[in-house]
Image (cartoon, rainbow, N blue to C red; front, side):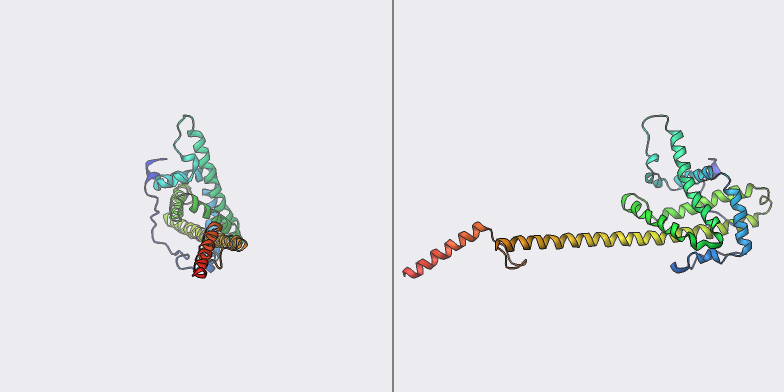
Length: 262
């Protein structure tokens, strides 16, 4: 990766006549931001995808490398990025990065495939978001990592698009294409966040149900055992052991006999 690519991957764009329509969308119509794109906008997305999607494995790998540079803590999310003691691991790590990058690029490819019927992609994005719920519980993954994902992807896409002969002399068209890609990527991530939020909600509900069930089962088991032994009147009254019961009975009998003798 050259020095320019290790710089902050926030894409600087010139003013163009298009705005990010995902900025104020509600959860119910997130994918509508893509639906509202004009036929020309979608045509531009498909055209630029032919450029950025030529080598998805390499492009995806470069994006991940930039993510690791910009947000080093993301390295802990991937087992293959852990420090290697023995040598000869560099090639394997590179292949692993490319593999994960390819999976990411395949999601974007699906968005282009379903561009005219983008809501058909929602179940896939919902499921992908839900799968990240486990990562939040088990790793240091946080949703702000997705923002780095977006910026580094846009940086790489712009780098590839501007090198194409059809865009190299038209910076305005390149900027417009990048803004369109931002709309697509933000919609993808927002839909994934919905799936993630639902998964976290389900996990919380499951934990609370399990805790309440364990507490209830514990009270029921204790109450049943005590009733069988005849030691407790209710769960709120202190329980007496059989020995203490015998001791108390003896004490009562002894006291009673003293009174009768008198």
